[in-house]
Amino acid sequence: MEFALLLIGNGVLIGLMYSLIALGFVLVYKATDAINFAQGEFVMLAALISAAVIVMAELPFWVAVIVALAGMIAFSFGLERIVLRPLLGRPIVAVIMATIGLAAILRGAGPFIFGVETKSFSLPVGDEPIFLGPFILQPVQVTGAVVSILFLAAFSWFFLKSRMGIAMRAVADNQQVASAMGINVERYFALAWAMAGIVSALGGIVWGSMLGVDVHVSLVGLKVFPVVILGGLDSVIGAVVGGLIVGIVENLAAGYLDPLVGGGTKDFAPYVLMIIALMVRPYGIFGKRKIERV
Amino acid sequence: MLTLNNIEVVYDGVILVLKGVSLQAKEGSITTVLGANGAGKSTTLKAISGVLYSERGEVTKGHIEFDGQRIDGKRASDITRLGIVQVFEGRRVFEHLTTEENLIAGAHIERELRKVRENIDLVYSYFPRLRERCHQEAGYLSGGEQQMLAIGRALMSRPRVMLLDEPSLGLAPMLVEEIFEIVSRLVNQEKLTVLLVEQNATMALGVAEHGYVMENGRIVLEGPAGKLRENSDIKEFYLGLNEVGSRKSYRDVKHYKRRKRWLS
Image (cartoon, rainbow over all chains, first blue to last red; front, side):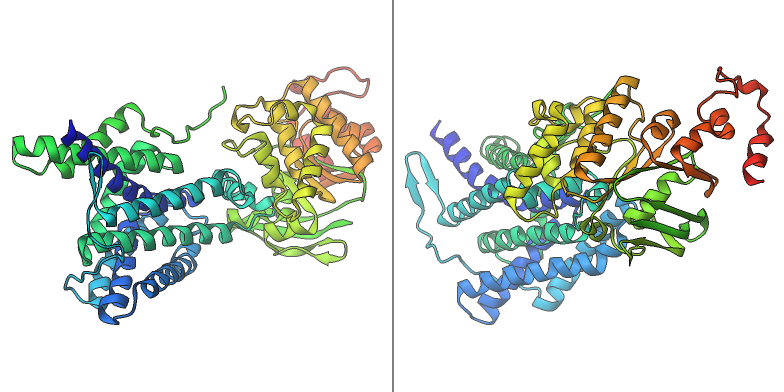
């Protein structure tokens, strides 16, 4: 039982990190209907930037946070302007293919610019594990989880209550009508991508400090798909729940199934779950259903 | 106050949809544009509101003036800021937003929260049914309620001109009457100017002051609504009546006749 709780505790912490990264994906999908296949590469880019600041330039940690945030926001704005805006009004598949191309470019350009060796840095939170009842928690993971919770709450509030959030949902619902309401659709697209940039920056710093920074950081992007498909592609709360489920399932699989079969179940358990979810609830737990009046 | 001068609209760079349309909407009244499917009525409205550009269409000739200012070529969101708002054909409410959120989104150009609340109350006073449904997702409202919401949402930006595209589409006759009655009240009480596109000619000519008839991307007939109602072509093709006022059988109408009489 203690072992199970331990696994679940760690699953929750990792899961919240998945939620945060998935949130970037959800924000873009919600506002622009585009599936961003480069979300993992966004995280990688942010991790590379912060590693460059800390390891190569030897500047303090807080500088890295600011540079990573600013860099990712600038990158997202530029991306929206140069790549995505010309594709406005075209089939959404064009945008999706563009993000796949972008992912490949980032995976190549990242190591090309920042070097291929793994760079490691740590968050200034110490590495003494925290003992809390049955749980043994890593400070890095706790920090990641706290940051995730803060931002998930902030974005939930933004979408549900703020006028900008309502306008953004209106854009997601119908771009043409939204523009006729005086809503500057392009500006909201840019905003959605910038928010994806912000969560990627945070995710990249925490994730990078846990794993060490190289091109493999982008693999976390693959975890985004089971998270958002379980939770619902366009739901902030769905990203949270989906992330928690994936984190917990992954850890339980690693703890209980791996010893039986010799390992590796951790990596595919979330996808099994994803396929089941697609069969029984294709719009996810909290995803919006298509409303059809008859 | 709103003038279209000989405008041409081309879609995708090749498809000529409007071929020199001129019309005027007079301040504080309803002007209607009648015509069959595909005549270019909706395109005319989209050209004014600027949403044409998101459909890869553009005004290639002529100009659109609002209060003496040229507005063709401006972005849709900027035109809304000038005080022209379009209510789209087929309601097009934001389905996943609640009624109230739809209204808030409609007031996007209004900065002050207090004014937004005032406008919401104004909309509810014209459409009391929306107040009862204020926290319901708009996609689950009935057709009539959605049309009311679409008009109410457009009102939220306190426009001076409303472009109404077929508000009667797919609604029961009683609802159509209710909605037209409210629109007339809006025109009288809120000093709204309405450009109304309709296929329901009886209703439209009943409330409008002036009317235009479009066919094939051109205006083929225009005049005060009262006169149009008396026009024998309108009676025959839109109101379904012949000279004596009884129902007309379309078997007796030769197809070429209709074209010929309007172009002559």
